[in-house]
Image 1 (spheres, rainbow, N blue to C red):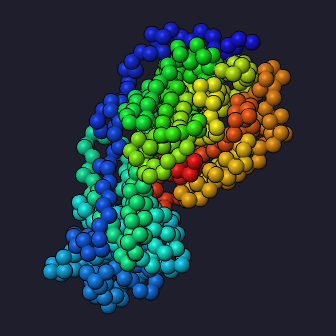
Image 2 (tube, rainbow, N blue to C red):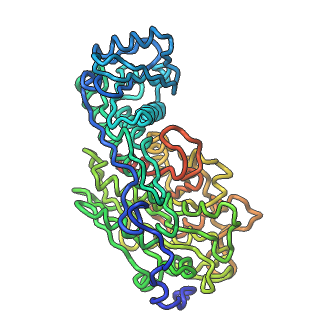
Image 3 (cartoon, rainbow, N blue to C red):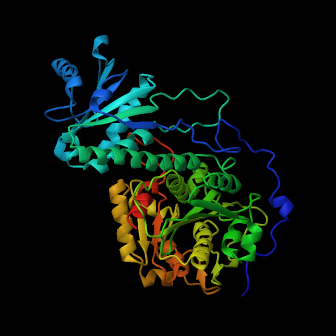
Length: 537
């Protein structure tokens, strides 16, 4: 069947009309130009002597000996003498110093036993130092890290985690408001590692640089993901993507006319109920000497009402987060364009594809029971219009295969509530067709402290999404259960023989426990995981 289900959408004039109720402007970052809502954190690597002076100097304190250099020896001795100094993990004390010391405040952040130090602990205590410095309303603070804190984590990983903690911890979403935003504090950090060899010091400094750029990508993702749907429309997301163009990165945007020519009936079927036109956003990051491509694909539902299969009203506002897969892809390319690869030279070009759309219950919206045709010819029975993410991803995967013939590809999506039931908010699910690729991504997630838990994807799951009225159905029967795996099983038909992995980040993308470098709202998850994976290609 040719192009089943796309049909005639409302006129282009209506689809592209200006929204008289649109809200935007400098205070919200989008609606006009997008910019992160906090000043970019500046992190400098300095000597421990240079870091020991200033309005706020923080030291990471392990159990036992705290060696932060001779300049801070007396201050630490006096702090210990008060009996208030603690090295317990996440304990924080601030001791005011005499003016002649050169250090107005000495902050001590406990990290526990050196043998128990992990990158996650370092990330958290670095964020705590930044937060306490900001509370004292200083413009700049220092952080001194004793060598015995770094040994277990290794210098490169330690530097990355500390920079990530500082940058992520400083992030605060600035909502649209009548009053101007309050001035941000502690937006400059000087970081020193005391007692390392020259070689390890260089690795630590390199880690700081890489970690800062990785975290800035995650902050960019968070800021997009936190935007309300009337501000972050598919068109606004495409404009934000185009602003990343430069150097090795090019960005192109396909409109609905172009997608209709490609017969992307699955994606356009989702979009037809909304006055906001869908966009297909394509990133190309060329690496010197690359042999072939890898593709990263993101679900970009800027709002998901469920369509005709409408969601319950309670917490529907959280469907602003249904574009967090796209947010991760945007954050990745923000980081790549700002040098987050450092000296790493992946052997593949990095391609990113975002299917951006709204899912709304208009009179022209697709109905349960409709049959649409994807770009590769698969026909799909739409049993539930709220299972729309897999539809837009299907066409994005087809586009990736046709035009880029990737060696490997992965998609990221807030695909199912079922994955939250299974895994909660502290990890994402992963499944796919290629165990080596799955293992690579899981390893990258472990390094980033963004764990991935593998779910099964068997032939029986693929059989569950076959339809009597088309090639495939977009959901399986409620009697089957395994809702998250069913979504992956559906996508597997479009991935075909290409090594492919699917990350269901519905839980990990927002709503997790606060952990110092994350307070609430969007987490920006998977940006750092993808960077670790790409660095290893």
